[in-house]
Amino acid sequence: MVRDEGGRVQARDRHDRDARKWVRQDQVDAGARPGTTTEESAELKRLKKENAELKRANEILKAAASFFAAELDRPHTRS
Image 1 (spheres, rainbow, N blue to C red):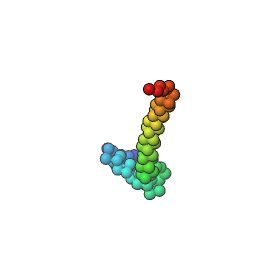
Image 2 (image 1 turned 90 degrees about the horizontal axis):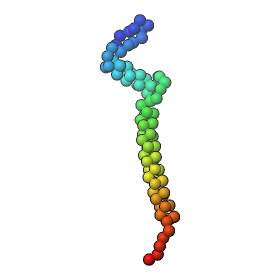
Image 3 (image 1 turned 90 degrees about the vertical axis):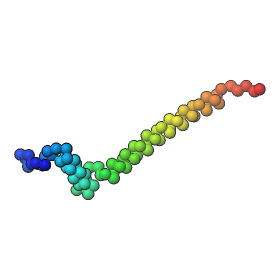
Image 4 (image 1 turned 30 degrees about the vertical axis):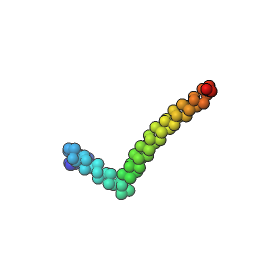
């Protein structure tokens, strides 16, 4: 890392950028910097996945309900 004219630390390569990202995330996790913590990010990811699963299940249930409703509406003949 190097300092620019304003005294700010600048990343020179990918490893420096990664290190700065890890430091920033650690500061967020410690409460020293605003942002989304690692724990909050993991919870959000889990909730998004759960939401997608529930949407898929809801679509399946809608299709099944539609199928069975059509079966009930169909005239039945007795043999």
